Amino acid sequence: MFAQFFGGYLLNKGLVNSDDLTTAIEDKKNTRMRLGVLAINAGLMTAQQVEHVNITQQSVDKRFGDLAVELGYVTNDDIERLLSQQPTDYLLLGQTLVNNGVLTNSQFESAINAYKAETQFSDEDMNDNQNEVLSRVINDFYHFDSAENARIYTDYVTLLFKNVIRFIGDDFTPLKSRMVREYQAKNFVKQEFSGSYNSVACICADNDAYKGLAERFSKESFTEIDDFVDATIGEFLNVVDGLFAVNESNEYGVELTMNPQEIIKDTKVELSKSGFCIPVQFLFGTVDFIICNQ
Amino acid sequence: MTLQDLTVLICDDSMFARKKLNMAIAAMGVGKIFEAADGAEAIEKFDQYKPDVVFMDIIMPKVTGIDALKAIIANHPDAKIVMASSVGTQGHLKDALKAGAADFLQKPITDEDAKKILENAAKGVL
Image 1 (cartoon, chains in turn cyan, blue):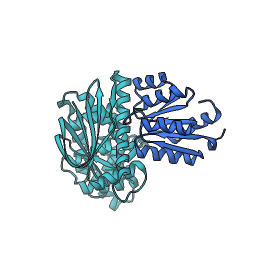
Image 2 (tube, rainbow over the protein chains, first blue to last red; image 1 turned 180 degrees about the vertical axis):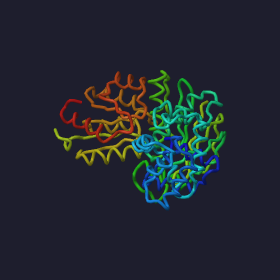
Image 3 (cartoon, rainbow over the protein chains, first blue to last red; image 1 turned 135 degrees about the vertical axis):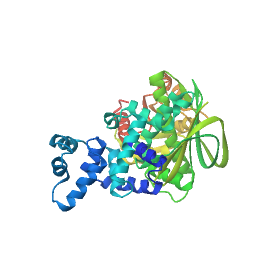
Image 4 (cartoon, rainbow over the protein chains, first blue to last red; image 1 turned 135 degrees about the horizontal axis):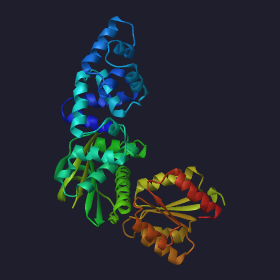
């Protein structure tokens, strides 16, 4: 999930725009990693050295690795180690942005170094999809620590993103969160939890994004928003919320019950307390997920 | 008994969940499939069709899946009711098994999960 959050970071920092990022997410599946980006990521070469090798390659018919060794930037062992690495998703995204001319090698170098410094993630962390690491990525991105019950927000949103990847797809970018107390909704699906604590989880979207989300979850196509589309989004929320309640029960002994989902259209919805609105940009539009622990 | 001989009742307030499960088990060859959208309808349709297997959601309006389970078991102690819920919490699991549920599936239900249940029901070992 680093690719999506690294994409979100680049967007938040204004290093890429939304269109370029969307294109890169689509192009990423056909991208092959190049040694230059791998070497920059591993801190073995600077962007300037990579550029130097690239330029030299224009006049000398040699492979990147051989030239980089000849120029004394890396050793043969370094090259072998880099080549044996599995390409990670966030690096593929970076490579695609470089290939598409959105980022130069040097911009990629500063961005990846700044991201690692800011999040304090090591290369091992970023190759690892362990729950603990994911929770950290998510907590850092949304600054849940500022809220009471940060643990609940972090766990819910971590689970949400895992299920987005599982049921909807990995071609999304998380956008900056905001606090909301009320929400003017075109399409709004809401589910309440009660028990050891009370919470409400919602999915909100305009028509295109709502339909797009339903199409991905149901693997069907829809021409209009009808009761079945509402039921589809309702069931996606229900599945996520249910798994969350199960985890709460198994890991923390917290017993929660859930109410049936409510579908609300074209109305201003008021929450009893401020909640986090988590916008996620998909290729079919932006969906807002709201989670509010009361 | 084969899958074709089975009568199945799907109880879920989600039209989406009913349709997906209905399509999946119809593709496996199940002969008769009925649907109910809440717990009250589930009790009524059980009496009407006497299904061999019931897939029962828990969180439903009017009558919950657990209450519907209890009501059906009270009149038909041998009913094979499989809870199919998004909320397989310890509490719900305990309540369901105590009330006589034959099994418990965590949503989303995979085709393999549903098939295993139906094959066991056909063999009489559910």
